[in-house]
Amino acid sequence: MVLPRRVRLLVAARAVNQLGAFSLAFLTVLLSRGFGASLATAGAVSAGFGLATIPSRLLGGRLADRLGRRRTILLGLVGCAAAQLGIATAPDLAVAAVCAVLLGLAFELYEPPSQAMIADAIPAEGRASAYALLTTALAVGNMGAGLVADVVGRANLRWLFVVDAATCLACALIIRLALPADQPSAKRVDEAAPGPNPWRDRALLTMTAAGTVFALVYMLMLVSLPLSLSADGMNPASAGLVMAVSTLALVAARPVMRLRRLADLSATAAFAAGYLLMAGGLAGYAVAHTLLVLLAPTVAWSLGNLLLMGHAFAVVSGLAPPGASARYLAVYGLSWGFATVAAPLAGTWLIGAFGPGTLWTAMAVVCLAMAVAQPPLLRRLARSDQERDSKSLASSAVSSGLA
Image (tube, rainbow, N blue to C red; front, side, top):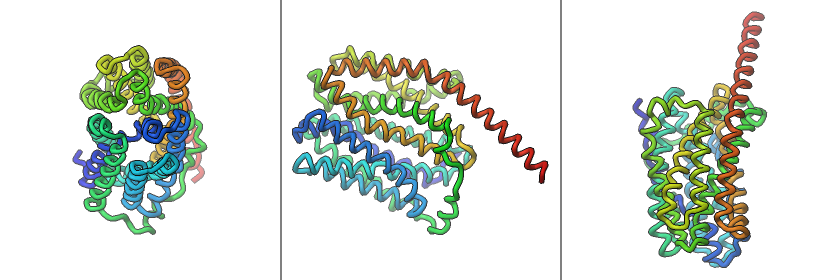
C-alpha cells in the first residue's frame, strides 16, 4: 500500500531528528568529566532525566487530544532543543542537572502524537507496515547518529548536545511546514471518548513488567557502554561507532526477517531466541577489551533486540480491545521511562564497584533468565486472552437474545 504523504513526511522528519539522538548516551560521561561529578552523582542526574520522561509520555497523550497532534510534537521538539542547548552551555553541574530534568519532561511529549498521527492516517490493516517504516527510518537515523557521535564527541562532548538540539529544530521545521494543521478542538474532544482502562488489564501490566526488564537491559547497554569503554582504556566516543554497527546490523537483518520461516516464528520462540542472542552478545562484551572484538557481540545483541522489539509490540497490540491499542501501547511504553530511571543508577554503581565485566555478565544472566521465563508467560497470556474472548462472545450472544 502507498502511505499517505503526511505519514512519509512524519517518518522523514523523525529520521532527521534521530541523527542527533546519541547525545544521551554520553550524559553521565559529560557530567563526570566535564563538570567533575562523581559516578554516583552523574548516575543520579541521569536517573532524574529518566524519571521525568514518565510523566512526559502521559502528558504528551493528554496534550495531543487537547492541543492537537502537530502542536504537541512541535512543543516537545522545541522543548528538547532548548534543554539540550542548556546542557551544552551550562556553567556548572547544578544548571546541567536542571536542564537534564527539563529535557526529560520534554523528551517523550512527541511520541504519543507521532504514533497517533500514523494511526489517524492509516487503516488498521496497513498500520503494521507504516510503523515498520518508522522503525526502519529511526534505525537509519541511529546509524548516522552513531557516526556523528564518534566524530563530534572526540572534539568535545558538549557539541553532541548542540547537534541533537539542531536536529530537533530541523525536525520541528519540517513538521511545521509540511504537515497539515491540527483539527478543531471540539472534534478532537469528541474523538477522545472514554474507553477501556488499560491500567486494569492484568495481562497488559504483566507484559509491561516483562517489557521493563527488557528496557532496563537495553538502557543499561546504552548508558553504560561509554563508561565501560573508558574503564577499559578506550575512548568513550567509540561507543558511537559500536552503536552504528548495531544499527547497520538491524537494517541489514530486516530483509532476512521477512523470510517465511522467520516471519512465521511464534512469539514464544522469538522471545526465547531473542534473549539468547542478547545474552550471547552481552557475555561477549564481558570478555572483549578492544574495539574490534566488541563488534561481533554487537551483531548478536542487535539481532536479539530486533526479534524482541517487534514481537513485544505485536503481543501488546493483540491484548488491546478494539479502539484501545494506542492507550495500551502508551502504558507499555512507560516501561522505557522506568528503565531510564534505573539504568544510570545500576550501571554506574556496578561499574564503579565491580568493573564493567561484572555489569555485562549480570545483564547476560538476566537475559538467560528471561529466555526461560518469557515463553511460558506468553502461553498463559494467550490462554487468558482466549478465555476473555469466549466470555465476551457469550455475553454478546446473551445480549442479542434479550434484544
